Length: 287
Image (cartoon, rainbow, N blue to C red):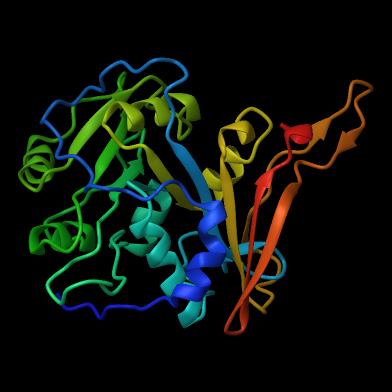
């Protein structure tokens, strides 16, 4: 599998710096083969960056399961730069099923010709074990080729044991299953449980990329305070009705009246080609 490298201008990278976790000094740690997370202190959570590309009408895709390209080349390169700055990258199982994503970093090295970017550890939220990956799945091919890392797959502890063949393939490439609480009949996991499990694996920063349900749940009233930074690419297009939208649940005041779901503060706008990137943090007043 051949993938071209991408470059991201240093001047634009400097504009993003206030919204990023500290630089990583070493690659993400190599996992053990254990299938159950270790315990982490309750307040031990990674730096969380929520980042995604959206249309003018806040849509992510034309329809559920439909791969939709929104980002232009400059903002696509920015996404890979962001991946180089995080220890982990998280998507829901719907994204894994719809896109067969590589979840690696293709940013060009800044040093010697032989230097490769630090790769983020893919985290797949898959409580019901819907993702029937194979050796031909893109993320597995990239891990085998040394151009990415095999994923950690979060599954419901109360569910069935993963198929032995899938577990073997995953662990041979350096990935693993991690069992968390939650019902195997549900597609929802508690974000604090997810983030504690990530931190327990030695991963101190994570970028959450999608899909719609994952993003909306993280932006919900119970979880928004877990987000350290928000970086959104806005493409100059409308996808229209029937699309997959980012829509966190409304908040209610004491008298039951609805209020805005959330607001960004300390914002910065960065033009990248025809797109514009909005950076900020969640207002504490809405957490």
